[in-house]
Amino acid sequence: MHALVLADGQAPTRDELDAAWPGWDRDVTLVVAADGGARLADLLGLSIDRWVGDGDSLDAPGQDELRRRRVPMTLAARDKDQTDAELALLAAVEAGATRITMIGMLGGPRADHALANVMLLGHPSAAGLAIAILDVTGRIRLLAGAAESRAGAGVGGSGAIDLSGGIGGLVSFVPLSDLVGLTTSGLEFALADADIEAGSSRTISNVRIDPAASASMRSGRVLVIESPATLAP
Image 1 (tube, rainbow, N blue to C red):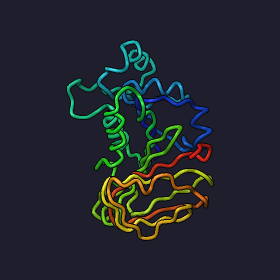
Image 2 (tube, rainbow, N blue to C red):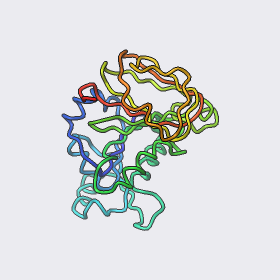
Image 3 (cartoon, rainbow, N blue to C red):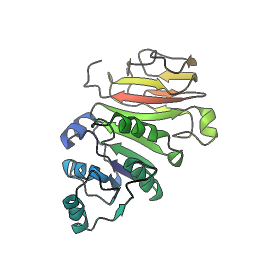
Image 4 (tube, rainbow, N blue to C red):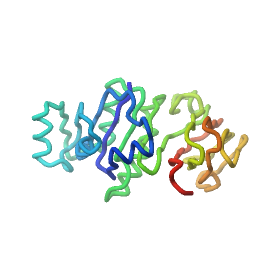
């Protein structure tokens, strides 16, 4: 099941997403809105299947409109241990999603929320699922090495990631830990069993030269950020 999670960050338009990532909403069967992310649904022409949040970013009239539309709603306490975005992600997982695309997770007035949203890619409850943050300027996924995947901490479950896409698209790797054995295929600056230290910028701004690009890694955790080919380096 492909689920969308809508958060209350920077809001792309439908035309912008369609141009940058054709087919981004293919096979979507569940849309979960995180609080003020409900407004994003209208911008994207989507119907909300479930809403979760504490109501601090969607006012009373907005909540009343969801009730009028008979959208199932879970109102959380203001003093809680999870962000609204995390609650929405967990709702998608609990509903049986195997692929989750999260939109509206970046930008906005809170840098802490944006960074926390990126870290949701490594949420234990999403281990083994295909999960991505999607924005007009990029798609962010987490690659865990084969060792972590065998231990149940990997996204995708094999220590490998498919980087298929348009020629000229940018592909960057941002290490969250020391990386062991990073190997790429179909990228201009090839890596073969490379070890990369956490914090290194060596793996920023690679370029896809083969539509069927890919990467694999023996150990470590790294954010993989792809940009559309329409963007300049």
